[in-house]
Length: 152
Length: 278
Image (tube, rainbow over all chains, first blue to last red; front, side, top):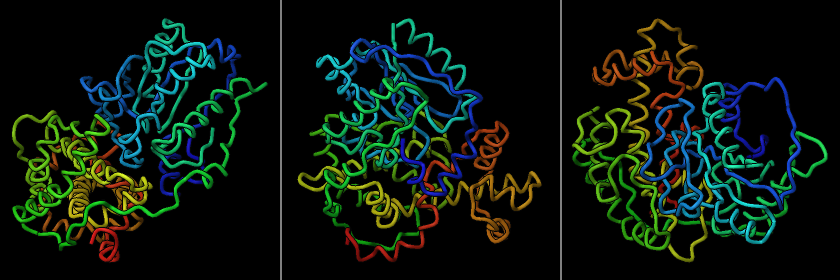
């Protein structure tokens, strides 16, 4: 996540309007990384090119298969307040599936999940709750131990 | 993990796998912290050691023209810009094997048509579009502006050997030097004007309208007088704006055209006349 102090004040104010503190800060013990099965969850509104584009801020999500090729990805985020050129040049800046596979091959992580998930950020968290709960069940069904949440 | 990289680059700069993997490893290693939650700061010195310091410049030189005020002439200007960028876009597509252009429902072969749609909306508020797009107007504007900006950006980043631009480089190049960037400001102004009329009709006060539209404080009064005298906003657009407010959508269409950091910089275009693309 971009350091709060580095975010322009106009955007900080924008964020403050959209978020509220969580009631609790639960902490769960994770398995050793070398044993962990990891899924990526991105808020960059990335999806399969033939999937529905993100339109509003309904809190919906998309499923990205773990064997997808970068040429099959699209990004339809509604915000114009982040740089997309880096993603256009190199998907790994915000969806590092290739790097995750490399870490798995090197034995640094246990495995990479079959499915990964994408939301559109800058959505009210309360609207995302239903989708988030669904994704958590899907992650369990895929035996995922660890979710790597990458904001954009 | 706090990172020193700008929005859009959470794992670091493009084509720097070593940095990206390092960020990834250090982030994953947070799970081994003895207690939590925890936030850590990624190394700052990495940025100075490994980032290029050479200034970026656009590979294309096109004439800095005064933006035309008639839609056909403006369309011609835009299409001329696209023509100059097309070789670099094609080179980038060849190297990367993919493009982000296409969310409007049509591909890069329709860029000229998309530019025409933007020009006609910007100048005349025209909402009629050819068949084949994936969304109706005015929602389509968000996707067409995305496709056009993606086209421009993908061309701009594609010259071999040129240092990769920073987000600010690209924002200033697109919004302050290209005709397309000027048209984006005009589109935003038209969408914002429609939103403003809807909010005024709802009887809200100035401060409420300013905050709902993310305007500078005290803007409504100065803008509304001109709107009421000569709004040039079609009924279709006003009706759509009203639907957005009725559905309590958190984002207005006018917010999806020009980034927040560029919104108050339109008048800097003359300052950039001698830079980069001329």
